Length: 119
Image (tube, rainbow, N blue to C red; front, side, top):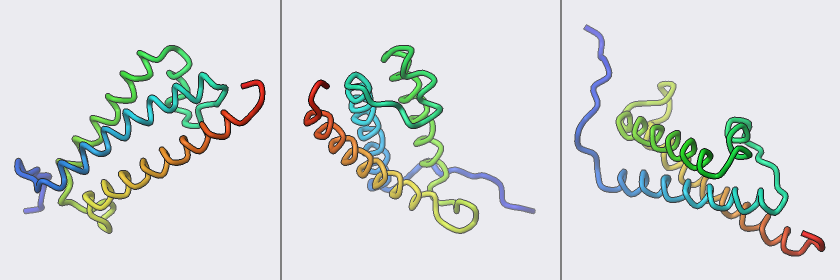
């Protein structure tokens, strides 16, 4: 009999810290994105570009829903391997690091926009 999906109902505390970190960085990214767009930037993510220009409320709802659902799925699958190669838990760490890098890039863009005359 083959193994099916069997999520566990207990996860280590560090996994919660990673999940909360991803969610908090996502909120910070949303604020930075709205700030940058107000300053003249263009949304590079084609999925989010469809909603970000329709209003910040819709953008926030879609972003938090997508991120929250993704984090929940990854936590449920944390002990499984993505493409049978890398544990989903490691993917979560990679996303956390990626979000940190994205926020650093957005902070840099804010500095650049502040130094451009006329913006």
